[in-house]
Image (cartoon, rainbow, N blue to C red; front, side, top):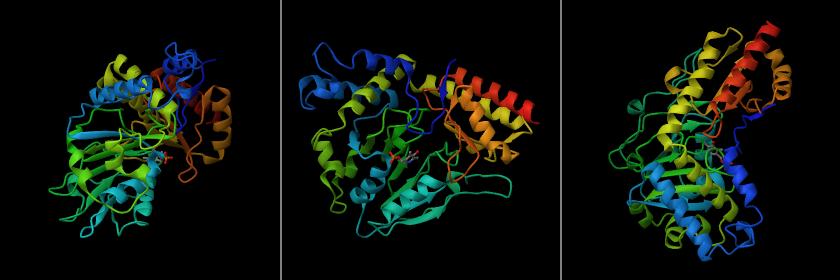
Length: 360
Ligand SMILES: *Cc1c(COP(=O)(O)O)cnc(C)c1O
């Protein structure tokens, strides 16, 4: 039986990448040792990091105006690193809130700065929604504007990019990076923890406009210092080398699979398959407005919640793993990142149809 892993994170990785990693686990590039067992400053590892960055730059079309950093501490590490690096004494950071993760980012920033938040949700009684970006009430001035393009828990995605005449735009792309084409030039800082669309947990990607590196910010740990990490090639200290290696392999796999454009087409097809089925069903529901439904994380609810435990149990027996919803929102959630093939989504839809039939 094929098994499909719908975990929100750490999420499934491309099977081809996992197989290659397994094959070279004990002996990488005929060195007689694992990639985990060599110096991060050795020429072999440095070649890997250069290849990795070049690959990401091609995939996302990142210009020389941006620095690409490979850092520690995942998404939440960046919740702290962003205010520590971008704080300005005479301006306030503005956090746009549209769900669980963007709210957590505000809370973390407020430990270090007097960040303010605005609510960009536009819910009605029977629909979850987000206001169009051009209607967000952004202040005239800010040290930066932070938002979360894909709310992993709530299942809400923002496809347009907010803009501001002077303040840099900062985006937490932990659960949407590389899933669809974006114009990096519309942003000033993009960050992402790796464990959804890039690789294993422990490493995070920061794409930062070079002009922002001159900000002094606040006193901060060296490992969270963008300017220092840029100067040191992301090697101020020992980086998570195995995670970096796997990220490089995932980028390579992405390029060979046709790049972000091909992923986007497949992700649209996958999301449509699942949402269309849910919309046509009177057994399941999803309350998110169509224009802001996440293509990566699809929360859905059984109209009869007393069947939740049975659904989780039987889906697991059918080889469909980790469908139980996030504890905050309940219900079910299928995370369908780049590595999930459309066959997995079809298997889920088939199971959901059968379960509905048997329990109606
Ligand atoms: C998972 C996630 C995070 C947190 O990542 P950690 O690596 O666990 O700190 C932050 N933001 C978003 C949008 C996420 O999906």
